[in-house]
Image (cartoon, rainbow, N blue to C red):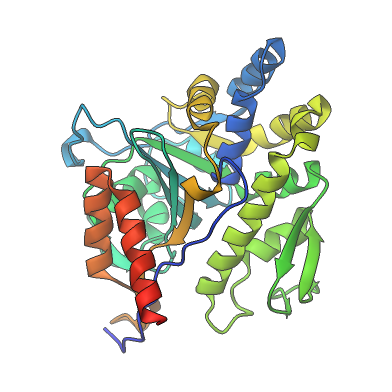
Length: 344
């Protein structure tokens, strides 16, 4: 298949906010923490403007079985172009790939949040189509095939699906008045004149969108893109959850109003569900949140000449077992200990 390069280990990152979720889902959870008639107004607007994914899941016969007593939750988070258009289709091939793919795990006791980024070029089996890059599942069979692919990879059932069109991400950063991030590498976004110097930058709109999507400017390509996405998510959620934002009804209303049309959820996930989950998680602190990348076995070349990210089979098996047994905390701790030992 190609030459292996050294394994990339998961990197643990602390997050200085109480709740760290995908930006779109985070907005909904924030709304769930706002009390009174204002919450009702926001919930009604959210339910009226968001899209439902007509068929988010594959046939039950093809899915892993989840223990009915298992109260943990797995949420697939997708970021893509034209997400709203895809969400209204039942199934089938679509002209789109999922640029951002994360699996969010919430343990049964709600003691933490684990968000795992998955490299979009990860080479894996897509049911019915053979081996492809994992993000090709959206093009080949829509959201149900993405779910089926990930459920097959980890042998674990996904409970909910949330998707944001990147147009909504752009509008979100603008509604918040820009997001400040610390950029580690100077670069100019491919095919643009957007230059990002080293240091603290305040980004919004198209410049923010290109920052999280750029990969051609970096030696390690998608690895740095994922790091930038995680960094931007940290800054985005930190700003959303500040008192300045949450106590300003006009800002919260504007964010929900402008972003909701670009959000899509499975049919069982509405504002009430999100609000309830938000209340369950409201007491979490920095040490309870983990954001990491699925370990890989480096990069290689497929039989047809594509540059791909190779799977770390051992890590996938371990994470699948941790998801099924609700022991992600132990797996993360084992990774910390391995990394510490390797670094002396």
